[in-house]
Image (cartoon, rainbow over all chains, first blue to last red; front, side, top):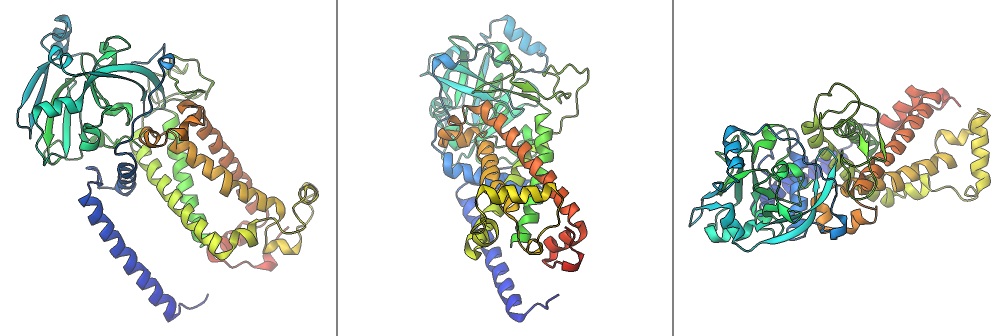
Length: 252
Length: 228
């Protein structure tokens, strides 16, 4: 066994000091440019932060792959949802005419929109893939109002950093950073494959986020809240997913 | 540096393997092309129960679902693997490790050299004394294949499963034939890496496990303990 020489000791100490201060500077820069996810703490925080930061630098404006009409899946899979609540059944019986999407939080004009209000706003379509974290996928055409149109109408204030969205299903809530909230393919979706969005696929209203895994595309959306911080929303980890053990950012 | 990165890679690979297996049991069906789900005929299935009751497996029970931490750990270990690999590559080029220790030696690059060493293995003939401190042509080729073919492929097919990464680099998944093809290839490349790991550990055991382990941990090899 060789003894550790003074030179090795000094170089190692210098390298450690440089590495430490480098990390501190990187952390400060990352925070400044919004590259730290709300679930950055804990055992898996470093990996999650690296993934989110790397992807935010690479994919802020990139568009999810769109497919030709011929690639629309003839056998899409709706996945299972909790049994509908009485409240949901009432809405379904009434053809979702009284369904409301509430927009509140840090906005100049809080809104309460019916599904027909949404349909009267500028809408778009996209043929994109739903990708489940379990491994399966399907392609469908999605028709909806881009989220940025609704946020523009509500007048989102400049300090806002996240849009929190809630499902009518109990305990299902999530949030997007502004890069995904203002992304042109993030839709408040009410149509699928030239028809109304079926209940199994999230009808009457699903927030589709095609650049992230399927669990980020909440079904039965009833409320959007603009906020500058995730503190005070659940455990402050960004969504219900980290509380259930799943990553907040699902772009992987 | 070679030894440190070897063990970091080992830790990352085991974590990736265990968590990857955990993720696969949530949908133990594989497809070819862009899309695949329980309504589509699979290319093949692994005959195990699933951790989701939405997957028809023929089994009456559902495995415990551990995807949450498995996914967090899978991606964190992937970062460890990629960063370790980057350090190893730079160090390997800097020190000439690839050229000196892994690239087959001059006069040892023809088919004859491979056949000769293979025959030596099959006869269970003792290794040349030079092989205590150096790799033979079959070892060199296997290591180069793992380092420059299998690991890049497994990273590529894994990244091709990221919907956000694919939005920035669509060709990354498209050249593989679609998302489900990428997932199936990710699985096959993993199998190839596991096969390498099994043979690798078997060879270490056959040539003297303790001595080889000490060599890879401390860098010291006792040549008198060397077994053919």
